Length: 241
Image (tube, rainbow, N blue to C red; front, side):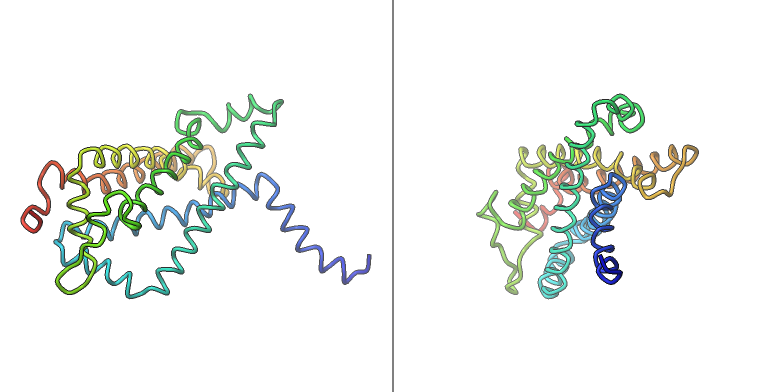
């Protein structure tokens, strides 16, 4: 093999070997996890504008529609992040299951608590919850009678759609369950990011784990505050009959 051909093939070989290694796969899972966590924060910030009244959240939703190229760019990035996150998580899961001699070590060092033992299963359930959420508020399949509500100005009436949606006790219960599982998943995943990216050690890891749990359950409280406020405290009753 000539020197030039070796140089040409080296980056490709390195890329394949890195992505096939557990370190490379864990790094991809961690980086895509960061992307998804940032989205969860941004999505919550937008949703919380419902407490400011219909004009705020409807304006927020309309701005997203007006910035369609940017919105679709974000959507593509998120879809790619979700696919890579799930794919490489499943590869790691499969590799761990096949490594029979190392199974005890794996369980002892990695799966040391209830969060890590169930993170993969909770991740799959969270994915199903996200699909339901999209079917509910984005695609309009769950409550189609509210999917095409609009304001008097011809804009999509997200406020009224959310008020009607979270007046249903079954939907509220399902959202709380889904958000609890999401927080359960994040409570371990956030702490693991620092370890995977080499930013932690035995001394700092308990601190990062605690931060992960705090962030996860703050997100949970932020998200569930919306359906609970609508269902139990009548949020929006002054605007929607």
